Image: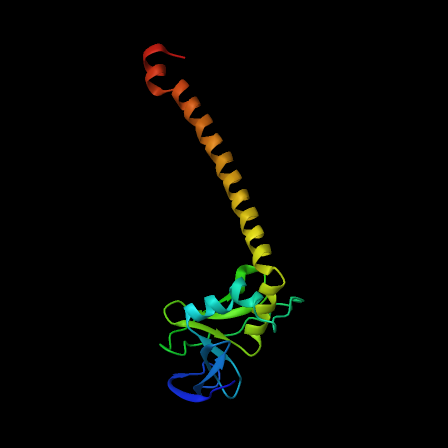
Length: 170
């Protein structure tokens, strides 16, 4: 069921048209009638991209095919506050570039919500977490190596301290 009501408080960052409200999975989202982009508040985005919500939806496609990352384009203004939004790859590996205003919400271009939900349904969140754990493990190993170097340097400085050289000689 799609309920369409005009939301004059927000306008599409791409088309500059007023966003209309419509129903998606029991949530009211704002959509541009021209480009079909979506505006989501952070809490709705978190729920709609959660494994729980995706797995209980029969329309989710578990066969996610990662598309090439689109060419870099200009930053879009926020639909609420008009400040420029940041662009980021959803979960670093999905290939879906979302526009994010930290204070207000997320702008998704046409079909990006479907692509994100397919990414989640295909186990993408688990792969993303595995990648993040590997990265953190490498960072911990690098810190451990640096700590070993500092400990060695501390021992050498203590052994050859200026006081010992001054009072005892070499």
